[in-house]
Amino acid sequence: MNKIFFKDLVVEHICKTTLKNSYLSINPHAKIILKTPKVSQAYITSLLTERESWIRKQLHSIALHPAQKINIEDEVLLFGELYSIDRDEALYLRENLEKIQVNNQKNILKCYDDFYKNISQIYLRERLEYFAKVMHLSYKEIKFKKMKSRWGSCSSFGVITLNTQLMKFKKELIDYVLVHELSHLVHMNHSQSFHALVERYIHNSKEIRKELKRIHL
Image (tube, rainbow, N blue to C red; front, side, top):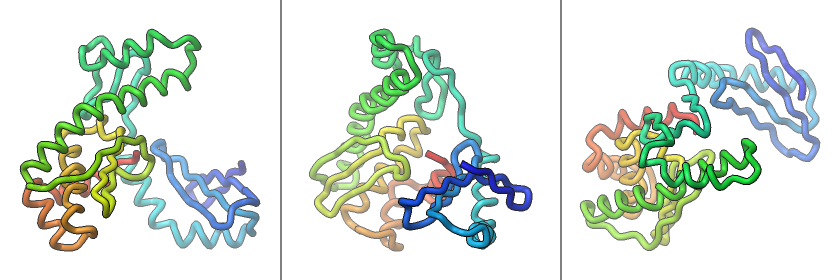
């Protein structure tokens, strides 16, 4: 990994000969990462120049909405708030942490992932069923999965997949995602009719959609 200095920006460059394309990303801690096959310095400079506006926009968004830090084994982020793991809501997490035989960060974080999946299967299922009833819609199946870049998805077969990380965020954001995916049962696109359907049940959907775009999973 090499550091590249582009104007006032520091970019971590990872060169992998197995890559066919170049990938530029910014993590929640504002670290700029560029992955490329073997390319020239001129190519990298050209790419960063082309994407500079996007990079600065993302850095500005992260500065306005920094990643929330928690003390693992002591706290858990749930519905946009930090809860002590001594709370009843965190019982499942607390019990799993107590069962860890090798107490390292990997095992601890797995307990958190399991906790979010467990509570998703309860809370998200109930909320999805509620909105499906209100919207007079039916889905075939619901799945729960930790995803890095999507809040949820809805297949043409009526299978809805929800990101278990949703449980970290405010309930109004969660409701928006649920209505969003249910609306795809009617419109398999993001047309004006689709957004109108979402707005019918989530009256501030435009504001919430903007807020979700600013959140780095």
